[in-house]
Image (cartoon, rainbow, N blue to C red):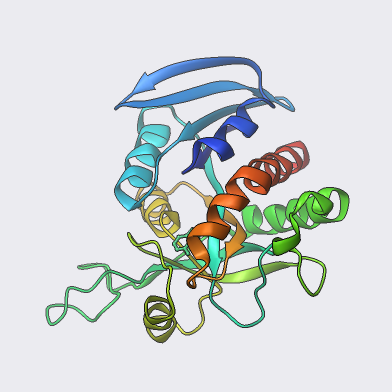
Length: 246
Ligand code: ADE
């Protein structure tokens, strides 16, 4: 199978490209796409950069020019729900854009002219990502730094994810996202854009997020620490197991 793997940060993507045999770069639309083999699959890994437009553009290239048959996004996110702790992993079952509001033309959160607020991930990809994340935590969870493994061992959750072109780093911003999407487990900046592109092209997708921070006043500091110490290992640990089990 031909699989596209997306990450927003260089730390996440470079750890995944080290898994590939015969990595071969290709430049399209200002991005480097690295093709290679892993466990008898053709993989194409791309550093999208941060945000919805960047992620959507990278997803379109993966599908329309590089012919991937599915897309998996891996990265970090800020925790929103009370049961979510830093060091946990969230596998998205559906995603919505918390910053999408074309009211009064359309209801807040609705993707104009589609009648939809949420887009689902693929159930089979989701189940396999969850199993890969659980195995990663069991076998390598100790790589997560102290601030990421506070009161209990890290867990994997499946649920709703909020996406928007904002880094959420204070209580007011976090509460605004919580009020708009009360069921969301975490917040990030790309997932719903990738899910929308995949939906439009009928390509199955999955999204897995390591919780780097609590979307509060310490979020920027914890985000940076997580990127340095854990995000790359987690991204590669999940993707390696996911692709080996396909
Ligand atoms: N990705 C990781 N942490 C985040 C946060 N607090 N807000 C938005 N995206 C994030």
